[in-house]
Every structure is written in C-alpha cells, then in structure tokens.
Image 1 (tube, rainbow, N blue to C red):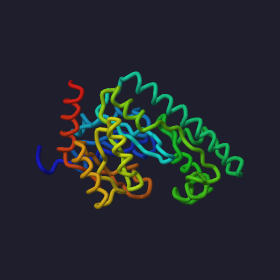
Image 2 (image 1 turned 45 degrees about the vertical axis):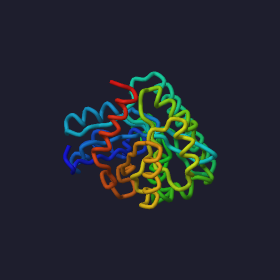
Image 3 (image 1 turned 180 degrees about the vertical axis):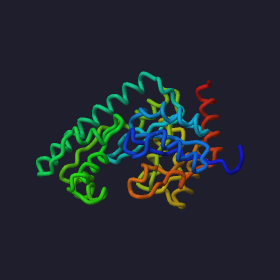
Image 4 (image 1 turned 45 degrees about the horizontal axis):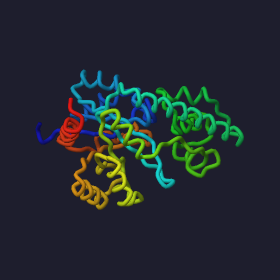
Length: 279
C-alpha cells in the first residue's frame, strides 16, 4: 500500500436512489484515482455483482456493502453493513421484505398525491427506479418531469418531504436488529453519518448491541463532530469508516471521492472481519 491510496466507502447507485449504475460508479472512482469503493445502496444489494465485475475491469476493489433503514426513539438511523456474505438467506429475506414495503409506501404516496390533484402513476415511478428499491427520489423525478415542481428540492419541500401532505413513513427495523442481521451474515456493522442528534448514550447502547464501527468522514460530519466520533471509536475499540454519500450528482454536484478515507481503513476493516469471522 502507498500513502496516496484512498477509498470512498459510502456511495449509492441507481439500484437504490442514486443516478449512476454500479459500473459507472466504479469507472468514475477509477478515473478519480480511488483504490476501493463501498456501494451501500439503501436496503438492497442488487448492484453488487455488477460493481464487482466492473471493479475487476477497472482495478478498483469493491467492498460489499448495504445501508439498512432503522429507527430509534422516532429518529431515523442507518446501519451500514460491510464484508457480509451476499448469499446469506436471512439477508435475502429481509431485503426482499424491504423491497415490498418500499413498493407499498410508494403506492401510498402516489395515492396521496393523486388526491391532491397531482397525477402520477406507479408505472411512471417504476420506470425511474432502475433497481428494486423504490424511493422518494424516484417520485421527485416524475414530479419534475411532469412539471409539478421545478427542482428536486421543491418536490420534497412541497409534496414528499417529512410532514408534507403526501408523505408516508417507511418501513424500518430497530438498529439492534440491523446489527444482528449483519452479524448473522458474517459482516461488520457501522453507524452511518452519526450527527449530533444521536446522543453518546445511544451510540454506547449500540456498541453494547455489537456495533463494530462509526462513520467519521461524511459531508455532514464536521470537524468537531469527527473528533467526538474518533474519540468514541478509540475509547470503545471500534473501527471508523467514511465516504461521500454520493448519489450521482442529483443535486448538481458529483461528490464521489470528495470525501474519502485512506486505504488503510479498508485494510483495518478486512483485518477485523478476518479476526471476527475467519475466512
């Protein structure tokens, strides 16, 4: 390993709510000089095989990843899994349930919009959702395309954001369940972008539940918060990770590789995985 090797371990593809295909993510990562990527699509690993094949082509290591939706005390918390067995039956069953629940939620939001005089169909939204994981960003794209809003942000502010008229809550599991699932599939669990609203005692409770690491590098993790997370990680013997949370430039900025971690972070994750689960 050389000192200038880097990794972006938090990227989304169009298999969830990103704009780039898994292969495009890997190609752009290669062009940006990254040695490794973690595609952590929301509640799906549909693009993992494509990403790994592209990684072989472009010489980029692909760390198996997924970002699971969970909730604690009414606040949404995401748990990232790395280096799990993608063929784990328990994981497949849970992700299939997430997929079905996301489809139901999209249908409810579309019904709400139709009642408001905003006419969308499920087929229009499904066309935007290349993968199996339908989300609000796909609905926002249709709202823009049909002229109901001018910008992606307006779609959320006016119609589908939290507390808006068409909003419907999504299916989530408890973070402890997410951690347990990742461990059952021989993976490592990380708390994604833990902002200040996630109090230290909550993090400690998740550590007691088996949490393996904290995401300390992220566009919304500022320097003072990063120091807190690094202190907690050191104090409790946790790993750290990080990345750009790139969604393919949906907001006009392609963040891929703009927030990154040294490749030694990947090495530490793989070493911890070996120690915890063996080969």
